[in-house]
Length: 341
View 1 (tube, rainbow, N blue to C red):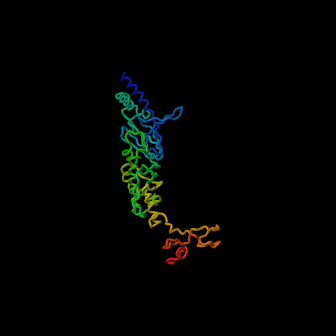
View 2: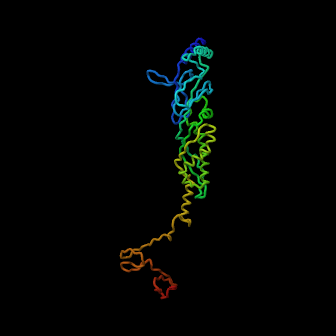
View 3: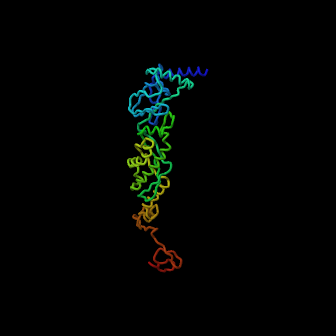
């Protein structure tokens, strides 16, 4: 019964593989770096897509703009194409009777019987996204060190923003980055390793600007210089080893950590008040204190501007040797004259 079932499966599978396929890439958006090809199936209910396991000779593959197509047979890359248009398969190990390969078709059916009705060969199509992949976010988990020449001290800053990449060597990317037997690869594959490398390069770019004397507050206007420095640091790793490169960098915000902000505020207060006091002393405030006369008039001099009465607070008192408190030149108790005046 096993041989009969295997023969039935082999004949059925071989006949179903004779149809020529029309293959396109699966869904590919700005977050997908690689995806497999799918077979287009037309029916009365509409268009559907199914995974590709075998590709018969004579089948067609549509390569869309900014896509790189890789054809594999038995895990080995047999062909690739970057030009958009239609690609006709003639390198597959799966024959088709519609191409005059009748003898090869019977031979493949016999091979399927030996392998329990399954085809011993497999073909895959992969599509790699060649568009610029934008919107990759970064943020500093820990503050970055920056020597500010204006403050003459080490400050610690935080920043976040986005960067973009592009796959420029798809074959190297496919061999070095894409996991084997993966149906698709998203930007999540690059998020951990590449983010750490990006932040290390960002620290190097900040160090270069610090050596040039750029103030921390001016870093936001140095996006072009930062992107150029980052490319010089990351291209030897990303482009030469993994097949993609950095395209642009956008820094959204740069801020100080709490300790650096506190130090800057203290420095600014000392600059405003060199005496060390953060607020001016009363002697430095030029304010004239007024007094109210018994007639109700507010005055600022020694005498009332309305009735001429003397400011009572301006009268100075002195104590005589006999113990009497006086305001005039002579003691009202013993008649002794006020000393020093």
